Length: 469
Image (cartoon, rainbow, N blue to C red):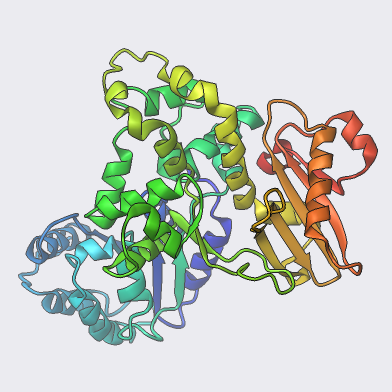
């Protein structure tokens, strides 16, 4: 099932349609996010596509041997006797010298056995292949640190790439399309537990409730997600001890670099900063600066937040219960006993992530464009006086002297008058200049009560139906 990716498909197909020059398209992102599927969708209709995929953990010679097997199989030609990437690319160049060809190098970091020699050789031979303007080459990879450092920022490939794309997980609305016949609540719960990774969403049986799906996939002995975290991180990072400490800590709350180092007991040296950046590049963690208003001291401290919904759910409910879950051979409903008592509390935090991931949708509903906005994001102010601090879920500072204050609420019932009082107190503490108009916006899973609506306090109330439809 292919869902979403309209903009990405359009950009890739625009490049493929340009036969006036050879195309080098770089596509990277975390494992299971749908890179290969996107490429296959984009090249539908192409007559000659040569597809090569790296093998995890194998040597250069094994990679070359498999590449040559695939080349012979796909072209029907005699297998080349090449021993090095230089010889491989020389032989491949003779094949693609004329006519229309699309080449796909999938999992490039594995294909090169984690070494950069393959990139250097690619540069050399690409400069020869481009004499045929009908050649298109995809360089695709999941190990984000390798792809960013050695491909995206490669001096060898500088000015040779015609399109570069980091593929993100699907939006909450797109993720909900996998279970389009289920309720908005279930679609939201799907995103808040598994996120927008297509491979994860494909595991879900749309004929069953999300509770039954999660119990089968996460809380049963042979569930897909019981070992997914270890598999994912070993593939992505190999040594996972420090990475696990980072994500486990950030699953509790965001932190600055120095605070995070104190939490997990490591110094800023010794590769810690690089490991944190690898998590950012892989889109498990978000690096951000809170909105700054006026001269608030320290308000622009760079913070790190775990944004991946599956990891939030995993460290909250699965990680410490793996032994118990491993004993659940008969599908007992451990979801209800492990998750059920605190599900609403968890969803309160996860709904903020869903709201942030839906910010483009929210801005559209508010009839705002990026050109209207000075800055936006989380706002917080810490003080030494108890009870005088302030945190705003999302603040949009506009050029026209208006601030949109977004309040995210996930409760089992419509938001009532108490929410208005909470936001009024936030506005009082925010103390905006007299020249600023604050327009409160409520993003509520269950909407709002008639009593709250009648006050006219919120400029707009956005519901799950708005976000997930």
